Length: 144
Length: 132
Image (tube, rainbow over all chains, first blue to last red):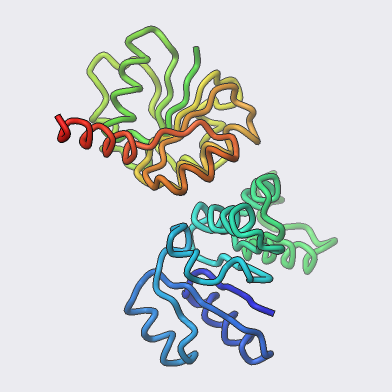
């Protein structure tokens, strides 16, 4: 199973690390050469330096044989375009995107991304289910 | 016509000013207030400070009733995403997007976006002029 992770921030780093631990083949794509050097020294030469949405560069990553492409940069627009290129140009079966603005979950689905994850939304759901049945303090205060 | 433009750089400001001058109702979105200084003194439209790929900002700009939409920021991906939101979510009849990267332009034109690539047209023009 070959997974390409785009974006070498904290999420991309830990994700790649755990995927490697579980025996997956992983390539991590990071724009910033200095950050890539750090990642390479801790993860072991799996990092490629380049733009996750630059077609010419993506073609060198072996994306056409990737089973999953995961876009986890901090910019929703970059994650969207990476997933769309992976899907339409490289026929990747499964694309996963991190979204920062929870409203983009629906938009990404409409635009063809297979799985979208919003940390904000997950946290919101957790808080709401944790507080299920209890009156949200903020809301009752604002109603008063 | 009602027209929404995302990105008030040189091109965005010129297009917005020209359309406004021609009597259209124009709303320009930019994330920097200073960008609106580029609009002509006779610009008669609306200015919205915000992120052009944020649905709420687009709604505030009146995208739901827009006849035309153009994304003209300096980020290809931002333009592509904004254009797709305008087309697929809000069903704006006429959507134009600028994409500098010719390869990416190719992909998204195939996907049905109306694209303009200044890189390609600029290179072609310069090439033709050099040949004489």
